[in-house]
Image 1 (cartoon, one colour):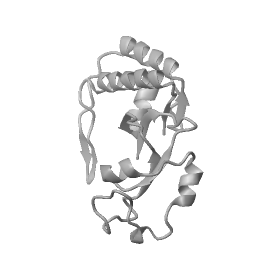
Image 2 (cartoon, rainbow, N blue to C red):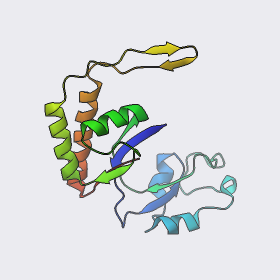
Image 3 (cartoon, one colour):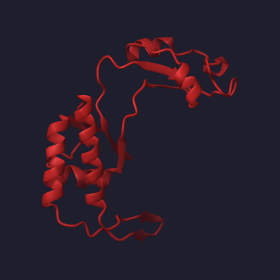
Image 4 (tube, helix red, strand yellow):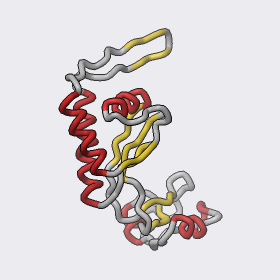
Length: 165
C-alpha cells in the first residue's frame, strides 16, 4: 500500500474519457463533472474507438480512465511507513494516512520540518525469511520534504489545497 500526495480536486475541473495515448486525450470531450463523465462512460468499452486514438480497436477497459482534464498535477507517492514518518515530521495526524490542508499551511510545515529535522541517517534493509524490508536511504526524509515543498508551491500557485491518501 502507498500514500500519494497531490493537489486537491478543484470544483469545476473538466473530466475526460480517454485511453493512454496522448492523441486521444487531446481529442477527448471534456465533461464539467465527474458524474457526467461517468454517465457517458461506455457500457461496452471493448467496442469503443475513441476519437483520435492511435491504436483503434486495441483499447482495453483497464487502460480507459476517467480523470481530470488538462492538468499536469504533480504527485509524490510514498510507502505507508514512509508517509507516516513524513506526516509525523510535518506535525500532521498519521493515523489514517489521508487528509488535506491549505497549500500555505503545508508549505510552512515543510519549511519548518526541513529546518528542524535532523539529517536522515536512513534505515538499512532487513530480511526475515521471505519478508524483505528495503529500508530507506540516507537523506530520504530531506529529499521527500523538498519534493513536498515544491508540491505545496505548485498548489499555492494554482489556488489548490494539498491532499494525501
